[in-house]
Length: 385
Ligand code: KIV
Ligand code: ZN
Image 1 (cartoon, helix red, strand yellow):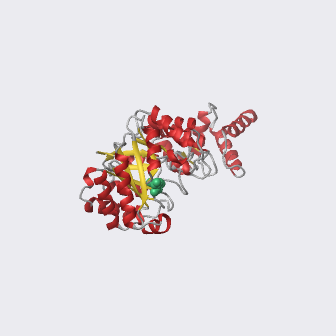
Image 2: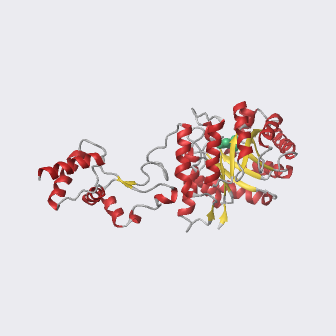
């Protein structure tokens, strides 16, 4: 099994979700939970962006010791200086430096020629290296960049001192095959690539962030970046809990492991959801309310006989206390009988038949039948008979 490093950017890219604004105490609370969850690296913020973010990154860097803390910087000296001031107290200070490399971004956003971008990137890595032992360098919009240009700039920033090369799919445009191919190309065409770690960073605009991250790992990435619950710019980032559980559940297929404590997933997800105000959709993979709920009678019957019929992940693995059999119009007699037993009510076969009929009638008007509804039905039947 080879080790995949997990780089969490909930507190930076995740906080870039429209409407999210965390104060330094909230950020620290999340950082402590990320440390318990076992992330290798956490991006605490963008120190040059505001006084509030500077203070938050500093507080986290001074407190967190079991994960390496990093901060984002543009290719600007004052950004690097601010990042150093915020991060110098960290156990392993790390800088995340980025500049765009696609023709579109260089021409229309940076208004720079490719040669100027190379010069600026190399100069800034050289400058930052005087302070930071670990420098991650990101080629923003890498997946839409010219591959030969990308290979050439990567070779030069490695010579200047970068220790991690990150290739973001900034606008969530790549397909898994294409994104994987880019990693393969870089591995094969950058002569000094084995001196650094390769990292993936995917956005979810086409719903492929997790698949793209796994494709990158299969093609040489040894670090996955993402966020808890997949929050982030626009449609968000790769959801780390999905990547981690997919690698674990399909370890027959993927020979990779992470240091994450999977049973901390639910707690981490709940905390991020509560503090950011970004609610998790019910059908979200791994941690949605319905991820371990079964409604149809056929499924409920199967799960009661052997849980593996319809469940590939145990709720306990991700810190959820147990699965739920949701009682609604698709539920069958078996699940109904089980719930009545759990309520501690003894019914004869005849009473059970009548209770089930009444329950079915109720599901025509109500989406979910609660334990209180069931209790009312069975107690009335018991009193009448
Ligand atoms: O998506 C992206 O390109 C980024 C960079 C700043 C790394 O978040
Ligand atoms: Zn991003």
